[in-house]
Length: 82
Image (cartoon, rainbow, N blue to C red):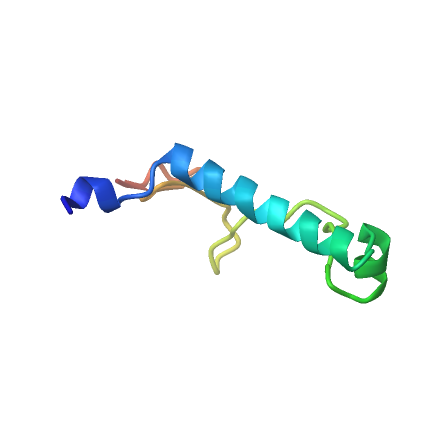
C-alpha cells in the first residue's frame, strides 16, 4: 500500500472513535451497567481543578519572564533572546 493510504485521516479517527463508543455502550447495555455504576467502581478519575491560576515564571533574581514559543523576553532590561 502507498504510505498515504496508511495515514489516519480525521474522518478515520472520528469513525474509530464512534465505533469505540458504540462498543462501550453495547457492553454497558449487555451487562446492565450505568455510568454511575462505573463511576462508583472507580473507573473514572476526575482531575481536580487548581484553586488558583499558575504563578508566572520568574528568574532566580525575581524578574518575571514571558515566553512565546522559543522567544524569551525579560521585562525592564530590554534584553531579548529570539
